[in-house]
Structures are given as C-alpha cells and as structure tokens.
Image 1 (cartoon, rainbow, N blue to C red):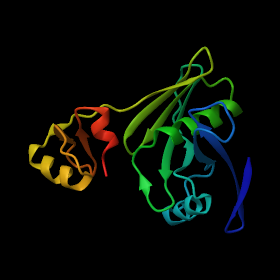
Image 2 (cartoon, rainbow, N blue to C red):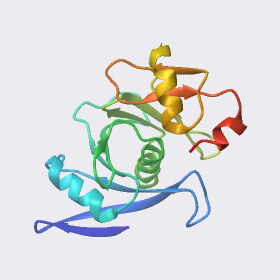
Image 3 (spheres, rainbow, N blue to C red):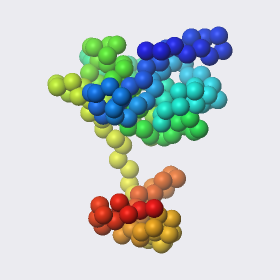
Image 4 (cartoon, one colour):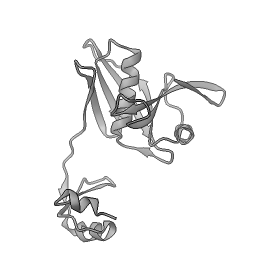
Length: 181
C-alpha cells in the first residue's frame, strides 16, 4: 500500500497484479478508495497519469447498501494515464480483491460503473468471478473492408453496439489473428 499527496490531502492506494498469484506477473492496476467522494475528473486523471499503469480504479461506497449479508455496493471508475474508460476487467478484479482483503466478510460486490452493474463474487476456493454486461451487437457489413484495411486482414464479420466507439471483428482462425498488423 502506498500514499499519494494530492493538494495537501493524503490518499492511500494499492497496486494489484490481476490474473495471477505470483508477484510481478499478471496485469497490474492501481486501486484508490475515494471515501469522501470522487475528486474532480482532472484530478483523477492526474493521479492515473502519476501511477502510469494501464488503469487506475477509483471507488467509493454507495449510500444504499444491500440487505443481504456479505454484499457491498460501490461506485467504480477507471482511468488510463490519458482517458476515463467505460469498462476494465482487470482493474475491477484488482479493486474487488483490495476491498475483500480489507473486509473479509464481503463475498459479493456490486460495482456501479459507466457500463452498468458488474458483480464480483468470491468463490469458495478464494478466486474471484466477475459477470460482464451483455450487450446487443449489430452486424455491420459495411465496415468489413475498412477494418480489413486497417489491420491487414479481412474479418468475416464486424459487430457494433450503437453509441459505442469500439467494434468487434470476427476472424476465422487464430493464425489469421496472429498475422494482424
């Protein structure tokens, strides 16, 4: 656990390697509790830039809490060193790990995020399981050639969710993916 000074205030943070139980392996993310509420976006962005990891997760307890024992509700946001992102799996798991380590009675966390509610549950063997949001995707055949030109191989299909900036390209084989530019 580290400490970060921001405008005279001291915030503690953790750095967690997700997807591993071996130190300095896996996917690192910083985790910071915002007990008094989220700082302004520009300060959260500056903190994430200071951490210089793929993502920094910022969380706070929600005012309303479930009545079920072992459950906790939080607001969760993720920042890269340059932007806020709508979804980040490894930083969600890092946050849940940090919260569950400090509050062993918590076995389920409902994370309220820009992409909806993500549920993280501690399994009996101690591993964490996360439910991702499921969204309807539309096939966009008019994007196939543009994606192919951008990555160097023509996908079989391109899927898109209206209102989002990301597309999902489907390729026919792992070899085709390995050859992408």
